[in-house]
Image 1: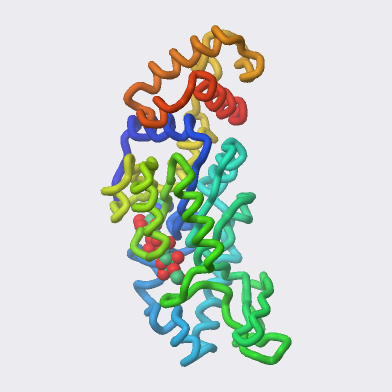
Image 2 (image 1 turned 180 degrees about the horizontal axis):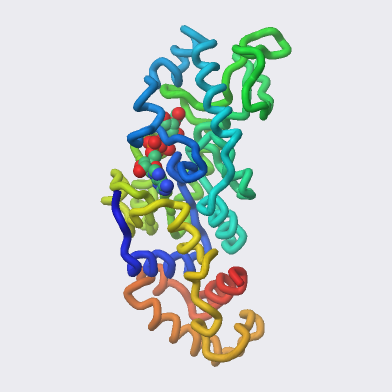
Length: 312
Ligand code: OAD
């Protein structure tokens, strides 16, 4: 398990402060601190279970009861879980940015439970049940289903509303995720081993479009080499610091000398120029130089003021 330097955190923090469009890709690691097991860690699900027997269309065809028993077991675990500070920090970040897309590989629903609004679920939703024949889909939040395997009203067998290995991702969801990554300034990659495609392909896509990639993961992953900054540690600890939803965020007095921080509309042109110069010197070598040079004084200050006023 790695560690991260405060200066890396500061660098990532300044990139996030000065960006208005952020995409986030999460994996099982963000829910680990909520007690939901990951797949590939030492105590991960794929260490004790074979995905070929539980998470493929062929497995379901062979033994629907076995597959449903496994999903029932996972539903029971997830039903007991609550969102952790990592989930909550992303809710706060969403409220501060004008463009924000949360792309998740997780089926546990903890992002929505925390209050995230714009969530693209690449691998479906464990609380959804779908008919194998008529395609009807419904939500059933009972932690354990009484009838295994469940059936649709039409009489056909129902399946979990998740994506299995060998199945395509929902077209609309992957298209929107791709679009969000292309149009965002930053891709924040949290708690994924970055080995399952097409989800993992969003990371090189971001790089190919010149976007800044920030990774949060206790371990090295294939994403670490591509990332502009890898913060090696638990998401529940790092995200609140990165988003400024804890005491780490600069105080108003840090931002400008003077009492209350003004809103952007309250600032005069010389004040904006002075603050922009101060911000540029402060962000020198810490903010993404490409993004920084593209921002006008007005835009830089507007984003900064907006960010910190919302965080107070
Ligand atoms: P994995 O289990 O492959 O990876 C979890 C990652 O989370 C690992 O890289 C861990 O180092 C990291 N991690 C563990 N604890 C963490 C913490 N507290 N904070 C941050 N990171 C932490 O899970 P995924 O990458 O999500 O797909 O797996 C991708 C897909 O493979 C899943 O959606 C699922 C699985 O098979 C399907 O079922 C189709």
